[in-house]
Image (cartoon, rainbow, N blue to C red; front, side, top):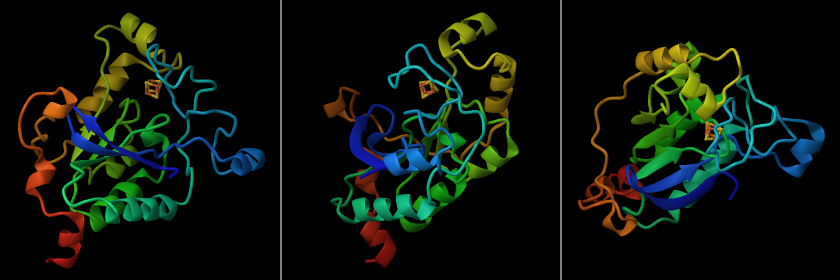
Length: 216
Ligand code: SF4
């Protein structure tokens, strides 16, 4: 699997099936310098957070781009969900090797995931591009958009998230506040097995993907 991982237990999203919309390039793509805009790097991001588990961002990826044909990822998703037991996944979550909104095809990927399966879709993002109209449109169909706000002052923001020098905290906050607010949906209560409290995960009350498709 190149794009899908999990499901992993998540405090906020129950059993979350991860999707990486900015995967590192395959060797052949790196050699051709296509289609990944940054063929030599392992992550595509426009910030360089001090806590990033993917290491330093070098160089920054500033422009949105197509990273791969969207159908490739959707076909992997179909295959994964078809093989998953009913109710095994609470959320499909876009998150991965960098900043998901840098993928120009994110809108069609979210739409594709939602058209086929009756499982809510979340996008975890640093929120830096939420002020852009195209990004807002791409996120319209997501059930949850979860941006990052780590700091309350420009100085702290610069020290923690280490964005490019022309990126301002005030623009980031404005982008997050003006972004699409997905229709209200309660998060599934955290999974006790993941150490997150008690409750029933949303997915256990929903029809499984195959039932949703066939109506049985
Ligand atoms: S926004 Fe995410 S991927 Fe980018 S540097 Fe920060 S933690 Fe890493």
